Length: 288
Image 1 (cartoon, rainbow, N blue to C red):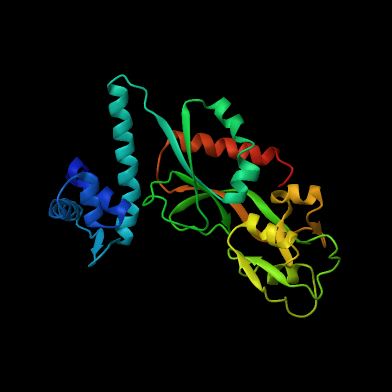
Image 2 (image 1 turned 60 degrees about the vertical axis):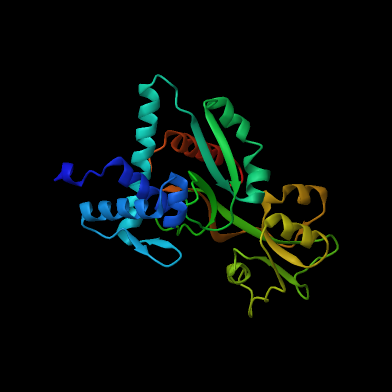
């Protein structure tokens, strides 16, 4: 049974390319094959397994539930085969790690600490990409991500790094929230309502008049006197220390957290090394 279900390498490569690119056309271009050849290889794999892996659309290929699960194992198997080939040839495999980071968290919290990881693991080459929100790790070729949310990323293994605590801040001269315009992050649609309830205030939370994609832009807007922003203090320390922003109350738990996210089922030593390192960094950091 096990031998019968083992795919041949061309079929596995074709399916992996379709899973990564979401298109038979793009997969064919990636593999330097015809679209028909890729389609036949995937169909052969589906026939061998006896299950549908891909829903073929006019412009895109969508993975079925079984296909999504199988794609994680296919990618892990191909990576292990590639690493094994390098070792068999007597070459040290390059340990690259592509990490998606949040813009402000990445520049203000992570980057000052990265030299410690480099000193500990000089054999790992880091590649950084900026992402906000959830995305398909496998399709975008990302090994892991730093994510801010509620721990609900389907098909991913999530390790909590720190819980988020927020407080309202504004430009100097603003002493109270009442009567001030309210600013918010797109990624925190219920942020003000949650803070309002957590602080036991009467009435309804004010509706934001402006929303922003990034914490750094939100901080700049608040410092410019455009309104009151609800923000995690550890990411705006420079503004607080310089007096460009002043707190209007103490911090409360937001219900969100910062997570290290990796594809479920993927085995990559560099990811485990970075995960273990960043967990140690957050454990030692006072911001938690």
